Length: 197
Ligand SMILES: [Fe+2]
Ligand SMILES: [Fe+2]
Image (tube, rainbow, N blue to C red; front, top):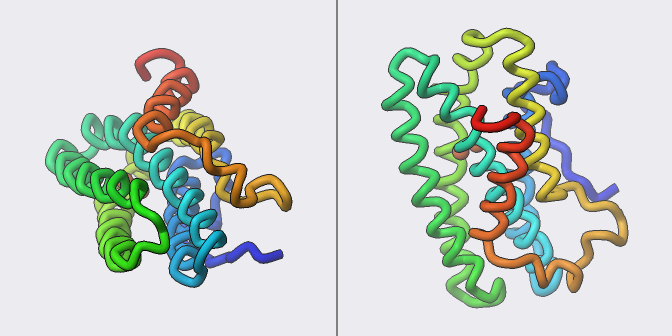
């Protein structure tokens, strides 16, 4: 098994039933994929970067569709908290789209990737601190499970845990641009939420 495993908060809850545990695990997966991109070169780096792009795209889209609207409505001061998170996500998406156009062997690639990593990790910490902990207190098990189902539908668009032989290099080329993936993810999430949520 080459899969990286970093223990993180949220592991104590079942991901199927708890949107917070699921999103925390994705934050860990994102961190591991940044590690993988930084630790590899050539074809391996291209492959790891493709997986990172996909996971980031579906993760942020799911948060925008599922947890930010909830936080906005239900948390004290939620309006401002969500505005701040959305601004961070917009900036990250722009950098991500620019990186996605670059060759991973370009000398400019790694410095920009590291800048993105810093921004993405600060963003994730802010979500965990200002949104996630409060979401658990502000909803019941049914609410957590419904949101988890929607985030899982999004995650199905980005298989981050490669099955041997499935996710190797050349097969990842024709996945289409980030924006198209985000649109498809939005549709999948909305279907899972059953209408406009
Ligand atoms: Fe986010
Ligand atoms: Fe996040």
